[in-house]
Amino acid sequence: MIHKRERKYIPAELEIKWETLEPIYTELLNRDIKSVDELEKWLQDRSEIEAALEEDFAWRYIRMTCDTNSEELLQNFQYFATEIEPQIAPFNNKLNEKFIASDYALELDGEKFYIYLRGVKNALELFREENIPIQTEIQVEQQKYQSITGSMSVEIADKEYTLEQASVFLKDQDRAKRQATWEKITARRLQEKEKLNELFNHLRGLRHKLSLNAGFENFRDYMFKALGRFDYTPHDCYNFHEAIETEIVPILQEQAEKRKAALKLAALKPWDTEVDTSGKPALKPFQNGEELIEKSIQCFRNIHSYLGERLEIMKDNGLFDVESRKGKAPGGYNYPLSETGAPFIFMNSAGVFRDLTTMVHEGGHAVHTFLTADLELNDFKHCPSEVAELASMSMELISMDNWDVYFKDEEELKRAKRDQLFDVLKTLPWVAVVDQFQHWIYTNPEHTNEQRTDAWTQIFDRFGANFVDWAGFEESKQNLWQKQLHIFEVPFYYIEYGMAQLGAIAVWKNYKENPETGLQQYLDALKLGYTKTITEIYETAGIKFDFSASYVKELAEFVKGEMEKIG
Image (tube, rainbow, N blue to C red):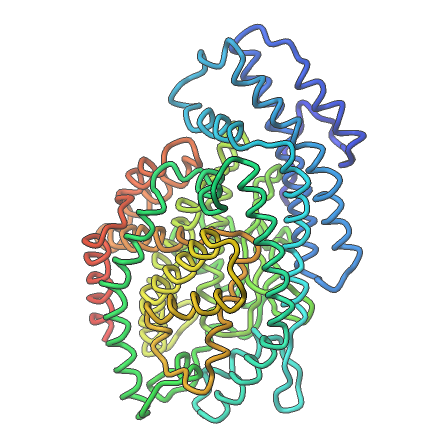
């Protein structure tokens, strides 16, 4: 069993309410610092209270998403968002000011604290007192997305299914069954169209006001600073979109034509994209959630004993919730527990191949959490998404050589690897669509619902529109953006998937060439947490932080070549 680390500064049994937190923050603010050693001790004490609060918030979020129908769990989450965070925010700003003003800040190890110092200065530049209540309202409002979508279900053959469970039928060889399922899922989503439009419009308004208060023209520019995007600009993102359009979309168009021919169809429809073209039943790598966890532990252990042991620790400590059920929030995540040094994995398994890749993806995040657990400051563990997603997406590819744990049949194993590599390429246009759509949304903050629909459609069409014929289902196509949780809950957290996907291909290429060296470079990079720049972390992994057209082309051709080798 694992336990929270022993506290050295705050009480071991600290009740999380402002009355008990305020004296701690006041002491930190008023403490007299007389040496660089005392400054480092002050940073460690501050880190300890931040880790305790992060873990408390993590459990409130985890429990709420595991049961979106519970009013009590929702209230517990909202209590932190409305009663704790607004009180802490001004103190954190004052503590940042105290740190930067300290005579000893410049005496800290420049290499060790460079990233941290940069982050503190960035936070000070962004902070506005008047934004605290707006940020609180955003935090509360955006959780309504999970409540709305978590309650969705459909009835198929007189049985109720969550949308994740129902999606299994989209892999059925019976085309009429696929169509009927797709139409039911789509109709259920469309029932909430206006409610989600209303929610999003409210969030968009709050986010725009936040950015104006902070001195920015729009929320896009505000978020680039808030996310600490020091290594690239919005213009670089547009160039990346263009590279994906030029280098990836034609490959996927070619694959779509092959799919259409294999299925003997005049046109691919939205319900024809998931079925296996071999005519065989859908891949079933496990029977239930427990088996998924056990097989994943074995898969990770076969890569390296350390990796398997991490997942086993999580299993022994009840740190998984993997089965789909009504009332559970959609999607999947790995949530680090800052004091415990382990994470919680949440997902919605429905017994399909995609659940396998979700598990190894979140497992990559989990390994990252363990590898950074002993870094000196809590902030050192807060990796930018470009690094966090490199951990997870690389693991999807590295783990493939050990998927015989899930597939005993050689032909099924080949099918799984082909599907995975196709998904690697398929991810990139969707990333470009979601990212470019958000650029448009927030640089056109006064847009109407109709204008937003038009913008989505134009962007989606530019990147292939999933390479299917949407005739007769235009409303469904126009509404696809509402499926993407990130747009509602974590705006602008998406282009990182594209950047990390390229990095993951490069990590996998190294691993294929030399498994021992490739794996060690990958683990060494993850151990750094956020103590180096993104570029330096990628270099430690033996790859480049590069999303130019030439690099996209090089890596896409490598993936295409590997697909051809599988046959």
